[in-house]
Image (cartoon, rainbow, N blue to C red):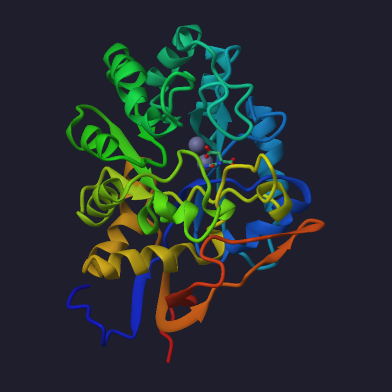
Length: 358
Ligand code: NCD
Ligand code: ZN
Ligand code: ZN
């Protein structure tokens, strides 16, 4: 896979996986799961439902609801996670390891993001659990922002590294950690240089946009997510990390659907809906960086390798075809506005399977 140019009209990749995805539940789940299944073979499914997916029994039931909501014929495996709370027990971690379908545990600092009020209030309370995770080699996925209201919202990720992540990894050096949806140069540098087992997911929105995009011609609620978009220098650091070939960085869309009305209001929800055009968005970023030859490793190899799962054997093909992202899509009783609504994307998913397309 090399020698890509503007004359390249088709791109064939090993089928990718999404290592950070919100699928919601009920009608919302039914509205969005097909979009992810149309692209990705597997996805790490976030547990921030209300109430949260906190036990192996919860995760088993949620997994079944996801499978039941899949469109007929879809080939998609949900990889479940547990929501770490102050009350999670070490026994639950051992049950998770033995379950075969729970693949990670998610740390939401209480109050950091959407549906995080059941999150951890003091990490010291979870020490027996972290110890059990370290022994079980169960990855800890972190929403890496401090919640201290005295810390500027744009600095919360960098503060998390110093105040939480470095001490945590000193105390649990063998704990496998994924720094989710990194948004800053500081996070990229930390992941590049830290010892031990660490990975990081990078979203399409943080690769495509900087914080100016939040205010382009007016307030743009559909580009609002947490951690919030940062300055252009940080976006460039993320693009270099994603396209640079370092196996610690891998694809995680953080596709986080909210109904249009929930985002377009006085206090709008955080989360961008990227699932319908996720792989095409990444392809656009990689092409602009002159790194299309590195897309496959970022999208299809690095995450599977980190999670110690087999790489996929199916392929997908993207075709060079300009298309306009819809202004809205059906969502439960409402509509949802995807990221990049009304914008043009130069690549389009053409097929999945081992067949070639004409
Ligand atoms: C996510 C959501 O809506 O569940 N929102 C977001 O802005 N990213 C939660 C999260 O991933 O932090
Ligand atoms: Zn998060
Ligand atoms: Zn998320």
